[in-house]
Image 1 (cartoon, one colour):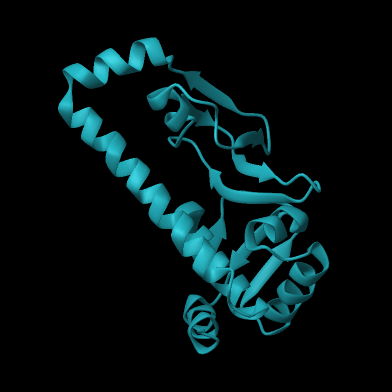
Image 2 (cartoon, one colour; image 1 turned 30 degrees about the horizontal axis):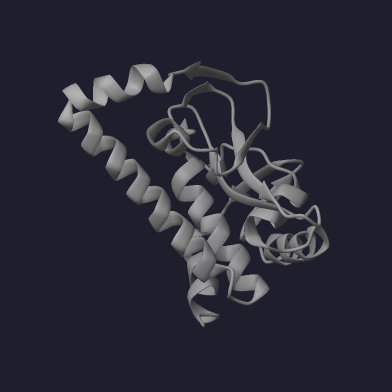
Length: 181
């Protein structure tokens, strides 16, 4: 099991055809690899650093006795797993939406998980490429680029390289809700 100390990483699966699906993004303080640490099975996804990162490694042989002695820590771990399952369920549901709504929902989700309030709006702390954002939203890079451009021209977001600043959370929320399926 790994605890992110610094940097960001993407947790993803790659299909046999080579298509990458990003399940979620992790920031400092997030835990990854807990499923394999708990059940001793194979890992369920790959982790790839998006920038220089530092992790703290906790081995299964160390974590299991500690959890057995500390029920509160065990409940925290269960809660964390439930939150990740809830997030995965939301992503599956959101990926059934039209592109514009899917992008809006995804940006709102990233803002909640990885956003920092700035005077101009909410800046996403995790810097990802348009390809990675598309893989997170089950969109092609080209579709992601077009949809980001539409939101940018509407003044809702500003994209500068791999940085996204959300200027208008209310309008983005309306777009996510209007296209509800």
